[in-house]
Length: 102
Image (cartoon, rainbow, N blue to C red; front, side, top):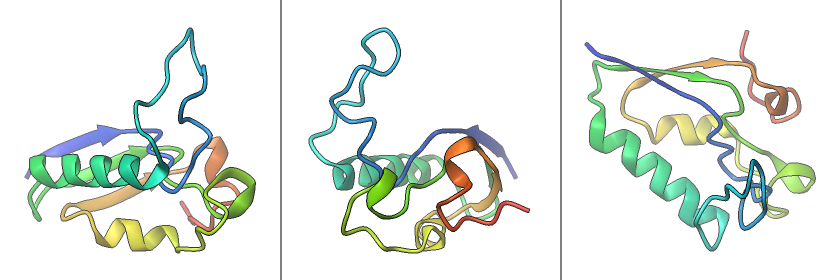
């Protein structure tokens, strides 16, 4: 079993695309779907079912306020797409995205 740590996936979100976030850093995707597919594929290319992903905040965005307006997917649908066991720690964007990190 291996443990992986990551943060700030913002799956379903569009606020990080093509905007200056930190000193000109942006995510190089044309749309949120490309970003989430890339992140999920990268996880699955590195992890096995016996591994654990500990995600340290801001896992998903939900609804039109912070995410794709049409995105009403339950963030746990993203978790089902990751083959490793996922442990979520709450980030500041997780408070309203329907991810219960307790």
